[in-house]
Length: 278
Length: 276
Image (cartoon, rainbow over all chains, first blue to last red):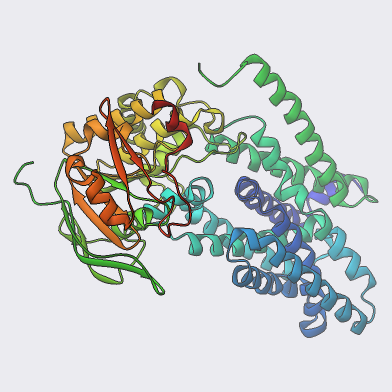
């Protein structure tokens, strides 16, 4: 069946809508993740959504609900244990190791989990029910609004913490809110590209955007654009292909954009020998 | 000084961390347009004093008022220039963006571009002479260039009090002079009080009205001529300290390196050594 047939189907439309919202949010928070050096937090919360999903399956029979709820638990744990930046990565490592252990245990309790498990690891947005999709849409919209509200103080705190604090930004509050935004976004993205490939939406577009500009607004705009191209492009390509999962296309597109941005960024810098004025 | 009310009022202020008293019984008025240098060894509570005035650190005793109101965080009458720290080379932020954050970076929301704000930012960048490099990524600028933008950021809100925490650290002599003159001209023009924390008095000696010297729980305040004497500093440090004046410069000999007196020798920032 052709692409146009699929695009007429509600499930595909909902998936594209959810994908777009997730891509916009991922693209929006990506530059902050890069600036705050939180790639490991992304990786950790993404992998732990596997545990959340397994718990969700066992308790309420719904991996999506479990993953979303689990991400809030993980964000709280990281926020409590990793107060100082230097402790953060080790705290995440501790939580990740323990959490994955719990996940494996939960998996052993659940029968007939195998396909659900691979869905969590590699993503399967077309497989989720319309009720789950609505939930994903609602959370994505909420996170998007929260990130928009958080944007300026988060930027200030991320690039210039001392002055931000002096100007009245509550660094701990902003940092904690960002952790929740990050955890929910990552969990949402995991439904599309899978827990193992979340970095392709949360990091790669922002990293590509940073090669092209030093203006925060432009970097954020490009990061969102790249995430949208990779995510929706990947979803559409997988509808066309039938056999290859969307996550494969998303990661390939996202990487291709990054490679192009590096080449273009190199050219930009060649044209402008030094940004430094003597 | 004019008859305007003091911008900063400390009354019997004390700051303790556990058993250790950084300073106590500190009563001090800073006048509008006054340039106060805060000197003293490492760990004597110079930066903590700024945090108190910023409302980020509670006093253990006494009160602190800024422009007639209890110090509170995020006050718009206070501008803050932090120590020079290096930004990542690939940080996606221009000098102009750093300055702009000083205007409304603490507010919630995205902050839509506004012509008024842009003009304000450009004007203050022009005023500190940073227009040439304000559009370059901040991580590629030199320490001196970054500090100029810091000053622009702090001046954006038209503060009545300017707090500077070792703003000359890691700058070369030429930039030390340029940056301190920039701060000095601002306070002369706008009557802004300046509280300037430093290891080293010489780069700012011509502009300092009074010195607050903090050492291991004790303090002295007065004009440089009153405070920077062998007798006064020996008394503060509780050990023999000599103060020499050579060609308008002050050289302190024998002052322990930090507040606990663990190291001997005088304390000067390495970059300042060449002018001794």
